[in-house]
Image (cartoon, rainbow, N blue to C red; front, side, top):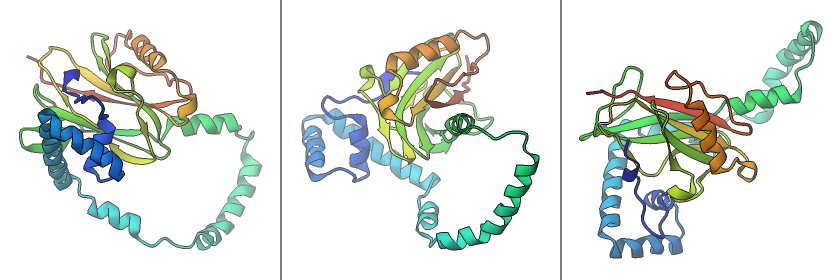
Length: 256
């Protein structure tokens, strides 16, 4: 995998470019991007490529059905409560009778922290754009993007891991453009990665801390993954880093 394929333009963070493409910037921020485009042919070419990718992606993952679900009228909260109140009361009596002990707040918190974060890998091969699913083997030259979804959002770190134990920071680190903070919902991360012809398997690891103020340092995240990479099996079994949740996506690749 070639980290150099992640675009970096001085003074214009990747996340700002993504928000510019989505028309989410203020007028002042948009002018900042447009001024950078005027003096940077590379940035202008990158934005043209990203617009083409977004257009191709929208054909594969149209937003229309999602918008319809989001805009559909929801039943009254009180109606839902009334509908469920009687079964819940009965269930509460049954649970009180059969549960050997109460579940502690700490146990509930551990379950909550483990869940929620999901990641998808989107692949561009020539003119085709598709989602990496079970059994899909990637090829050298494929460009991949990552889509993450989480109900809470927070500080995100993205790292690449090779079967030889090499850990490469990709997003959220000082060397990759700084912190990356995402809101709740689904996000396609800025930039893309091009798979190289190195004879080794690779994986992507996403680490999310819901509370950005208490997020582990970038160095702690990298050390955590480097320690896990010492396992014989690939991809390794990851023990959660305290205060975070993670997702791992293997990138099975044709080997020469």
